[in-house]
Structures are given as C-alpha cells and as structure tokens.
Image (cartoon, rainbow, N blue to C red):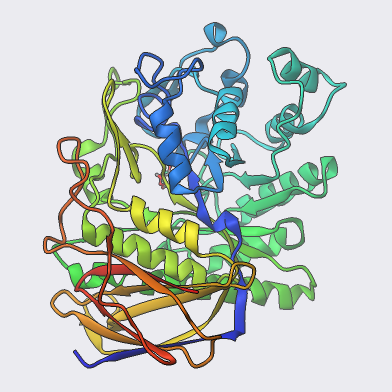
Length: 503
Ligand code: AHR
C-alpha cells in the first residue's frame, strides 16, 4: 500500500468536544441491570447490592451521561412502579423484551448508582403508551424541590434533594413499528411539541431530545425528521439518531466501512435540521443526540434469542449478549471518529449499551466482570479526545465495498486540547490484508517533543474476550511510531484502531 498522509490544522477548529458524547445507555433489558450492575449476593456487591467490580470498570470506561430506563422498554413503563418501598413495587410484564420486570431497581437506586460512577442521568419519558401528564408527573417528582404531593413523595421515599435531571428524551424510536405506541411523524410531532412545551412551562432550561429515526435505513428517514422538527423546532434542543451495525454474510469489507453510513446519517440530519431552521426563520440551533449507537448482531437476536410464548416471561434472561471481536472494536472506534468529526453538531451520544446487553462490560453471576474488545477504543477516546476537533485530511488508497461503493482505507480525526497541550489522533486501517504506513504532517502544529501510540489489532480479527479468557485482546504500544522534524510516521496493521498522542 502506498504511504498515506494525514495533516491536521489546530487553526481550523470544527467544534468543542462535548463530554456528553461519551455517554452510554442502561435499559431494563436482559441482564443489564439485574445480574449486571446489580447483584446483591455477589462477593463484590456493596450494601445497596451494586457490584463494586462493575462500578470500577464503568469508571475506567469514562462514561458521561447515561440514558435510562429505555429503549423500547420505556414505551410500556409506568415510572410510579419503580419508586417507593421495594417490597411494595409490582412486578410487570415487559412487552418489548418479553420479560418480567421486578422493579427492584428504580429511579432512586439507579440514581444512587450513578453517583458512585460519577455519571449524569439522562431520563426518557414514555410517549408510547402514556402521554404528557405522566411525563409532567415524573418531571415534578424528579426535579421539584418540595411543596407538592409528588415532590413530598420523593422526599418520603428517601430523597430530599431533587434529582435535577437536565436531559430528557421525549419517548424512544417512535418511528419504529416495533415500538409500543408507534405513531406517524405528524402524530408524534404534535405529542412531542405539546409535551416539550408543558415540560418547559415547569423549567425552560431543560434540555429536550425529540425522537429522530431509529436508523438511516427506515423508510420514513428524512421526512420523519422534517415533519417532527416542523412541530417541535423551537421547543427542543436535540434530535436523536440511532444506528447499529453488524457484519452480515461474511462481508467484512462493508462492515469495516460502517462509519461511512454514520457520516452520511449525521450529514443528512444536520441538513434537515438546518432546512427546518431556515423555513421557520429561527435563530435557535438544534443539535444531534446520537443516543443509541454500537455494533449489534441483531440478526442473531431475531433468529436465535428472541423470546416468545404466552407463559414465558423470564426475569433478566440472557438477551443481546454479543461477544465482540477485534473487528467489532475497530468499527466502534471508527464510529467514535465519526461522532467526533461533527463535534460542532453532535453534542451528545450514548453507546448502547453498558453492561451485558450489547455491552463493553460483561459479568458472570457470582463470578468475574471483564472488558470486551469494544471497551478499549471507547475508554481511550473518552480519556484522550479533549478540547476541540480540528480539520484533518487523510490521503490514502480506497477499496470497493458492496454496501458503500468505494471507501477510503483509512479514517481519522484529531482533537487538540490547548489547556493540556495534548493532541490526539484517532485512526483506523480498514484494509484486511495490508499494513498502512501513515505519515503525519506536523507542519501546522507547535513543535512536538513527545509522541506515543497504542493500537488494537490481532492476527485473528474475530478474536474475543470471554469468561474463560477475559484478557485475550487488549491494547498494545505501537512502537513503529517515529518522530522526525515536522513529521512522524507509524505503521498501522490491517483491521486496526490506533490512538496517537502528541505533546
Ligand atoms: O438497545 C437495544 C434496543 O435498540 C433499544 O431498546 C431500542 O431503542 C433500539 O431498537
């Protein structure tokens, strides 16, 4: 492969990196909560029943805001069931995942867990089977200091101080026919606008996320965003995007280029937001909350794991427990590059999900917790992508894919943090056979005195970390990095994700 070249220019910033881009998502689904972050009998559990080993890993992962409690789950959820004395909480059917929800962990417990991991709560309201009034009740229960029945009930339930939730999702994937209470864009837009205005009558500073499309490949994509924003534009701050990718039919080349799809998704939604803004003559800027993204072997779920049967409603079944490969981690790292590239408009994002369910962290009941391959690019990007994204150009070879046509072999983004003096370059090599030699042009930046690189790659691109072998895959120092005068070079192995830090 010919030598590739990368140039970045700190004088051409794109946007400040918002910490909320390193958010995640905890849904009451499978073993995400029960036997995941919560397992009272576990040797590492604290007095609340939360596993200390999981808390430690979540801290290492570096997650900012965590979206809760769903997902599809939220569209059948009655929030009142999840507060008050645990012994009095009702068990309910969860129609979205064909399970039983015990409500043993609810708003108070989850919020106390969030305090342990140092993350912010991002709450979703049920606009599927419920409506504006229930959303208002939850808001008042959560955020009003005192003096009403709902605020006093929260205090009586053990929480005097309000939760003060800032970010609220107005439902979940309302464009999806699988969603309880699925609606047309017009119907949902009206309901979301009414709910947003009512919530803002309580507190105009709330940050509200209206549902966009659950994939760029939905038949209503584009028109859904236009119609929904037409109803809600001045009443919301974000529109959501959701995207999941998987290697299908052994087509690794297309899968490795999944970020091409995410780039196009973001560009189209930004264009639609700005179109509605122009038509309305509004000064208000709506941004993107990419509040579900990941690799998810959905085909496997549909064919193998999906639960059915009128008498079959298990508690915390093993669902969506994908074991992530090296290739999956490279794609996850690349999707983070896409989110960062549009730091000017992608202001919030949630890796879906966090523990056991399509997750970077896995647990065994009574046993260990371990890091999946996807843990590494997320943790390092969260730790090192600080400051602002700056203009970055890569010249490299291309390859053909069945899904996206001709795509670049390399993809990269650069962040520059003036406060720490650190520049971080995140780069993937999508080639399945060739090591790429990348030359970094440092002529636009201050003299670099120190450079280090770490790479995720493996001779077996389908290698995974498992209960039996939890440390099979990890990061290694890339010692091919050579720093010269105004230039650096590095070798990037096939199917790899690398972070280079310069100071
Ligand atoms: O994250 C799993 C599911 O994917 C969520 O519940 C839903 O919102 C999406 O379809």
